[in-house]
Amino acid sequence: MVWLPDLVGADTALLLIITSTLTSMLTAAMGIGGGVLLLAVMATVVPPAALIPVHGLVQLGSNGNRALLTRDHIDWSLLRLFFAGAAVGAVIGYFVVVQLPVEVIQLSVAGFILFLVWGPKLGKQEMPPAGLVLAGVGTTLMTMFVGATGPLVAAFVHRLGYEKYRTVATFAACMTAQHLLKMVVFGLLGFAFSDWLPLILAMVAGGFAGTWIGLHILKRLPAERFQLIFRLLVTVLALRLVTQVFSN
Image 1 (cartoon, one colour):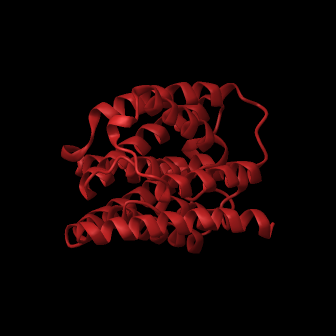
Image 2 (image 1 turned 60 degrees about the vertical axis):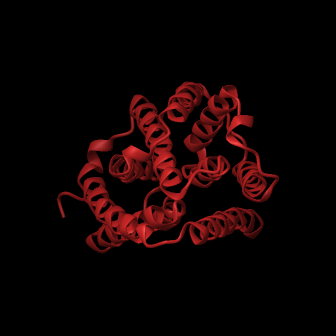
Image 3 (image 1 turned 90 degrees about the vertical axis):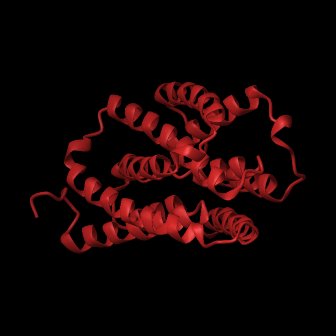
């Protein structure tokens, strides 16, 4: 098909659109998980050079939709601090040419996620503005190299003890800011987004439908069950990073 990029057939495109729909539904309903699962599927069918920027633009659409639909619940003060740090991280990412081994990054992210989710509880008042800015710097720099830092950002937002809608909305807003900055960096580096744009738009449309369905599921999910499912899902994703390191 003329609207598909080279090396991507109609069957693959359909798989990616369906996966985008289902993973957006998962993230909207559970608060986390969709971006990593989508990246795992895309890694099997998308050329490596296009994987991170294409995944990032799809996630920008998915998280942007979710942030728009839940905008009344966003913690805007946190978002401003996170965005300030994310902008710094994006600038550093543009100039960094030497990256850490992927295995080191994966183990570091996994360990940090597990600590944030299961470690001693800290209240929001114990997180200084500088900590929020540094979270934006670190996670945005990481996403330039590993793509899906959603579990780390989600674990960080979960740490603040918000109710379920504020958790989902603030996480979506932070990820929207992060992916937007990442797309600017890859554009400046010369990635040809136009070759992938029709497929990306179709995946974003599927993601919008998935987000709408997922948010309706969230309404029916008790707060206590949401917190438990959220923690377990983030833990599984962290452990998956560890198993990937030792299985390679």
